[in-house]
Amino acid sequence: MEGDALRGHLELLLLAALASEEQHGYALIEWLRTQSEGALDLGEGSVYPALRRLEAAGWVTSSWRSDGGRRKRIYRLTKRGEERLRREREGWDDLVRTVGLVLEAS
Image (cartoon, rainbow, N blue to C red; front, side, top):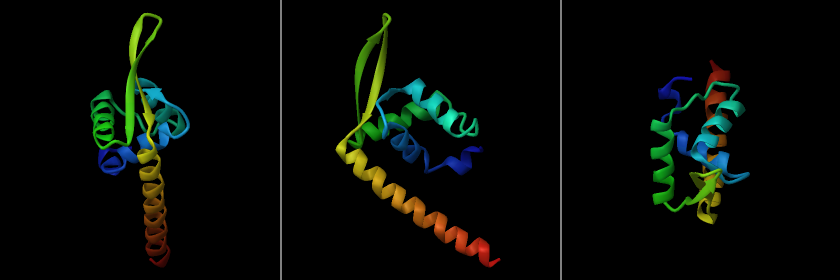
């Protein structure tokens, strides 16, 4: 999937990825790749800045954990993030419905 198609949706995808469980950044990248059957092959250079933006907005929080001697930053959805995800999903559903109406009419 090309970057232009993702622009503006990466943060929604990350919120959705964190809805079921907390994860570290690389695990989020792998989860999105797996769930999208390889269509979302995102780089660290786009995912980590997006996670920092989500954290600055108060939609996710993070903490450091050690795993086998390696430190990992673990991200989790906040209550505000859950609400944001709900609103974003509603907006996405509206967009898909609207685009579908236009495409069906053509």
